[in-house]
Image (cartoon, rainbow, N blue to C red; front, side):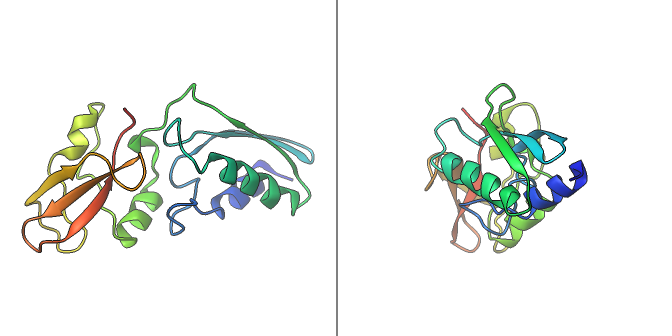
Length: 157
């Protein structure tokens, strides 16, 4: 099987916490090597304590096995995940799922919390309510224009 075919199979695997976005579009797949019917896949979790890692490893292995590929999935922390890894398709899917997306990315993680636009009404009259959301990789904001609370992906700490 070709490298492109393996990437296509991986792109069809949804993020366990946000099914509208794939693990590829979230930037959680690093290096992929294919040799014959074997593939070596690097999985880069959004956080070191991500509880969904075993599920993603299993899903990758099962999806590839169903297509005749023996997958070796290894979890890597050598390249840490950051929002800069999210592909444009991932940002669009996150926004469609009701998450805030940063107005700009930078090397400074604090920049993600500046000028956060409400995904409901688009206002930037927002404030951080809690740096801790339902998962370690999310923060909770409040929109002062429409009154809605919403989530933003935050950088690893």
